[in-house]
Length: 161
View 1 (spheres, rainbow, N blue to C red):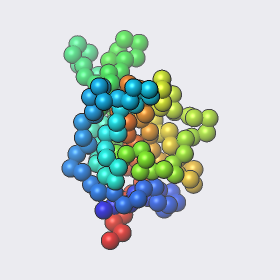
View 2 (cartoon, rainbow, N blue to C red):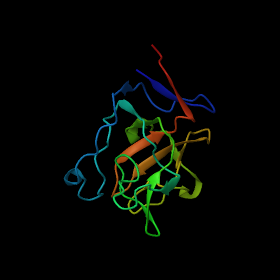
View 3 (cartoon, rainbow, N blue to C red):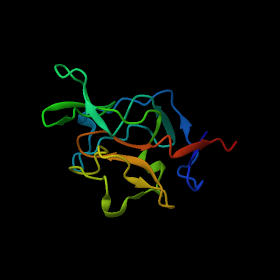
View 4 (cartoon, rainbow, N blue to C red):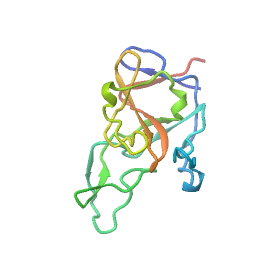
């Protein structure tokens, strides 16, 4: 079991969470809520997994412009003025169920929270610890996964047992 803490203030961000060996696949589009269009959470509550691949901003041109691929794991394709993009963001983020970090707050003026029906997560960190430190990115838009990424450089795990 692991509790994740803010690297700036040491405050607890999550309850005890159980590790999973990998981040699960995103549920099928048919499983999205009919009203909100939100996908079910990628991870079950009470668990976490480490995202080993680059994830989130910044984005760079994809090396294979002909065939390309989604911009990041579990994410949609991304294009900037017709150029296929891929994440060059951080690796080893801690992915959790969004409700496992209930005290995180949106940034002032909802900075980096743009999206159609919720924050897309494309603009970088968009959630802060109660102390004000930017620590996570919530992904909760109608076209992507529903998950929370705790930035590996801004949080740390602690085993209280």
